[in-house]
Length: 72
View 1 (cartoon, one colour):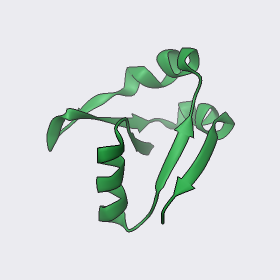
View 2 (cartoon, helix red, strand yellow):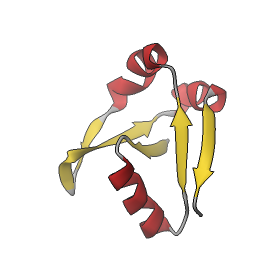
View 3 (cartoon, one colour):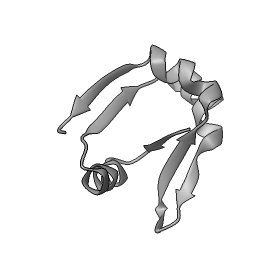
């Protein structure tokens, strides 16, 4: 399982908590809608934010995506 945030605000909270940077990932909308969006859940500490626990079965989407580390 890999945890992602839909909003930059939550990603930055993760980065601060874990002492890492933000990994920005570009996924085509059609692929995101079909493979990643079903895993979106409200973040427990702030339900207006969306957390995305991506299961191992969808790692191929992450591995094929263009990504860049910001900060860290």
